[in-house]
Length: 283
Image 1 (cartoon, rainbow, N blue to C red):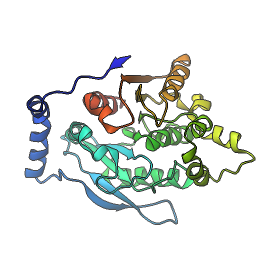
Image 2: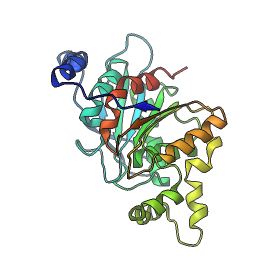
Image 3: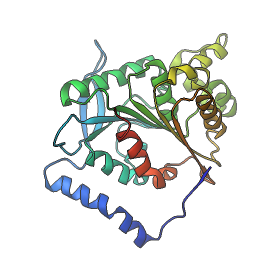
Image 4: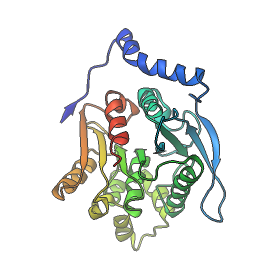
């Protein structure tokens, strides 16, 4: 178990972020967009475009750029302030992705999609559009999800084996039948998103639960992060899932942070490790 690092003083925090601040300034001065922009990317065939917030990377001297698709928490959207990875605990992470030639894209999938079939098709379309229009390397595509987005990133990887290279899931729910018993206020939006009715409920929830579909994660490296005091998603969701993955000898990194709750701040000490995991897992 890894314990949360103590919060640095304000001056130390400035020093720690200085390389990232310099990088972002250099991006702006050189004409490379340091700030996110809103773009329309081609949606599923026959469907409307998908509105996305897009962070452009630095231009690479050689090779193709990579892509990280971010999936936000329940109630979120692609708009600034409404998705997790755009907040302060991820400032260094975003800069590192840009420095290493990775696009960061936040597609608007709706506030409570829970990675239903429509959302899966939209994520597929966004990935394909970035490969076609921006020359993204199809072998360097990754998912990064938080809360609803974490559970959703695992569902997407489960339903589309080998579509993405790796997945980061921050406090994910991995057993939906159990989680909806623990958090009944989410039952209606989850079951509505997936068209689940009372009769086949357990079987239907099992089909979208990563814990019951472990074999789908063979060959997809995972990084999970969870706090011991998370009252929204019990850390046992990650513990049981990680154990099942390790029993199969599948690739997984897991950090459980002592005393941390269900908030973005959990990621602050791990930003460089998260960036390394995503950008160095390409073949």
